[in-house]
Figure 1 (cartoon, helix red, strand yellow):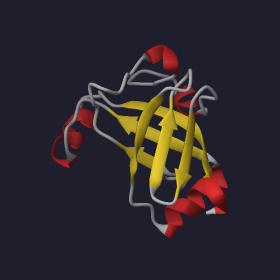
Figure 2 (cartoon, one colour):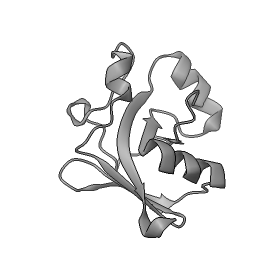
Figure 3 (cartoon, helix red, strand yellow):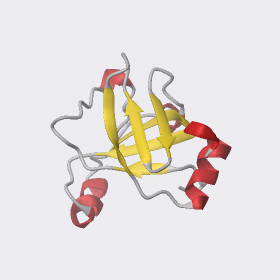
Length: 116
């Protein structure tokens, strides 16, 4: 990201609900709306495990990620994680999905667990 905000790019998954009323922003959404952290969401990074919870506390993502020292530093600085998803299955079709304006964005507050 240009402002060095940490982002997680993750393919859409049938098990992960993508509801616009949860705060997802897509093509045609005001940029300020997409950048504002959705306070009903939360994310916690504990070592290599990232847990993202959607409104109501339901788990939206829970898994291991490869987070560099710089990425953790950006989490500490910005305290916001930008989630980027859409109908792509790999890096090979991500560009076409983005070019078609089919990506969805959501900013969520994030914290590091255990003072990492």
